[in-house]
Amino acid sequence: MVTVATGGIWVICAMATAGVVARPFRWPEAVWALGGAILLLLLGLLPFDSAMSAVGRGTDVYLFLIGMMLLSEVAREHGLFDWVAATAALHARGSSPRLFALVYATGIVTTTFLSNDATAVVLTPAVYAAVRRAKAEPLPLLFACALIANAASFVLPISNPANLVLYGGHMPPLGQWFASFALPSAAAIGVTFVGLRWVERHRIAGSCASHVEREPLSRGGRIALAGLVATAALLLGVSAADIELGLPTALAGIATMMLVSALTRTSPLTAIRSVSWSVLPLVAGLFMLVAALEQTGVVTRIADALSAASRDPEWASAVAGSVLAIASNAVNNLPAGLVASLAVTQAHPPQLVVDGLLIGVDLGPNLSITGSLATILWLQAIRREGEDVGFWDFLKVGAVTMPPALIAALGARLLVG
Image (tube, rainbow, N blue to C red; front, top):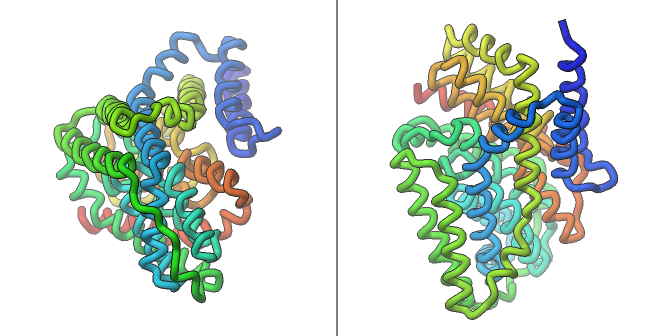
């Protein structure tokens, strides 16, 4: 029987989620997530202690995002990503299909070592600038940034904050990660490329400008690049040692920012002001909404379903990953991943099932524009450049690219055992 309190929680959470998705009045997503959480607190539907505990669960994610956003903004400010995108345009040698492939490859590297949010926030505007100079059709290349941000987001544990959420900050050792996800990642990346290349074949066909102006990489850009490489190496080591990623990422971001500022005699405030700080309250608000839903027993029901299904781990992995992939588009993959993480903690399903869930929460958001934080950030980035993609326009691309990639990745995970 559904009580009044339970019904109220479901309604408020649904309205808050709809606000995050639709952004009525063009208010930021964080307003709707936090607004729903505050309303739950005011109505006594979410105890204050539970809300603060929920916010605390996200500490590692906040630190990870802070570090990555600082690294990305320093690199952007000193022209590193513009230089990379212009280099890709030069190597395209006037071929739009080759430019598409090079941008996609750049997105793979950026997502793998800097996270999908970096691809969305920093690489996207740099690609747009290079595309404009190359006089190519922008949308196929912008879609490439959006889709590879999710398709490559389980190459490494550091490639997506949702990985931290699903595993509760306790990531598998790096060797185990590669054994589980190397083949599924390759399948997701490859199938997504083929699908997007086919969908956009008409807009990609033809030529683009072969001579693109590329400024020499500045001193600050070179230092930022060294900082990014050092950070990637640090995080690989930290991940291999099974240490939480948030604090090392934040410290690396701060250190790189201060070093670049000191050696180039520029103010770090520029990078600090450019960071999308609203992402942090958005994540905190989503975590509080999940805490409220947890009180309704929904997590226990999901845990029971996982326990029952886990008698056949292969079937459970495929079904659980597929269901979570779809759910991530309905409520965003961060809260969906958190609910799944709580259910996993209760149910203790086989590792194969947990890995299927991770593939679903990372790759599933390629279906719709609201599926992941990275895609929301990508949309904000292209809007600043004068472009826009509606919900249905993105869905038309996602419906062709995401399901085959999800099937391929889940199937590849079953193959490796």
